[in-house]
Amino acid sequence: MRQNAAGGLLLYGPPGCGKTFIARALAGELGAKFLSIGITDVLDPHFGQSERNLHEAFQLARREAPCVLFFDEVDALGGRRSQTSTSMMRTAVNQLLTELDGVGADNEGVFVLGATNQPWDIDPALRRPGRFDRTVLVLPPDAEARAAIFTFHLRSRPTGAIDIAALARATEGLSGADIALVCETATETAMMDGVTSGVVRDIQHDDLLSALEQAHPTVSAWLDSARNVVLFGDDDGTYKELRRYLKKVKRL
Ligand SMILES: Nc1ncnc2c1ncn2[C@@H]1O[C@H](COP(=O)(O)OP(=O)(O)O)[C@@H](O)[C@H]1O
Ligand SMILES: [Mg+2]
Image (cartoon, rainbow, N blue to C red; front, side, top):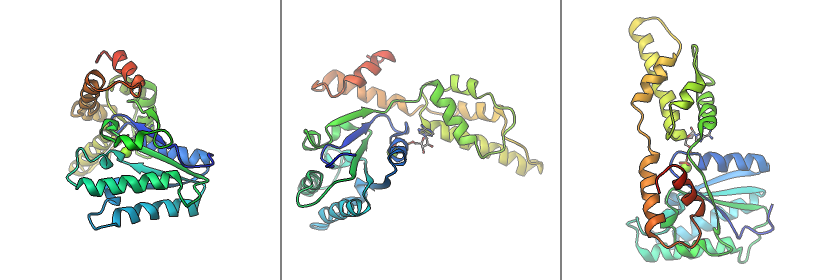
């Protein structure tokens, strides 16, 4: 683990593809506690309260070290899409920078992770060296990962014969969250059938196929906005990985 929390890692990518999931798993791998902070929970219009909230989050993490301090929706601090006043954002960002730099405090054993669907909305001050300077793109699951996600979400549910490999093949472009919803919907269908017929039955492959028909790939809209950023935004090398992926899926 790093000596200093300065230099956090930023996970970014389409919604529902496992950023939060990975952050939590990473904490487990490191044998560290996991402390998750939603930026929108931290922000408070009362004077000085956002800064206090941030300070307390870091203090807690320092006490609990080794600890992964996870900031979800860091883009909410960017100010671009929020109604909150810019001066409030400014002070909150400054406080976060102070805490990250470990000014007057010991950040040893505090590993800072951030996550966002919109890295392009993040306050540039937060992206400078020593801050959230390294980015990791969390991509939609490939067929193998989709199979694992189906297995995971059906693991404790009563199922008949299910062809997981076929489901994985049929769900190209769906996120982990989309797949979780498909499993949820199929479970409800089987349950409702049981209620109406009076005979309890397992979840069948066909239930999952019908649920699939109602699924809307949520990743597609994200890819469109990502494409615009890559095409029309400044290219300082941040989105190299994203650019490569967009080319691969023929969006660029
Ligand atoms: N690798 C994965 N394995 C199992 N489930 C996953 C995986 N990735 C995503 N999911 C499912 O999708 C949901 C959303 O994932 P999440 O990590 O919250 O996405 P994000 O933070 O990127 O929006 C999770 O609650 C989980 O049900
Ligand atoms: Mg998340």
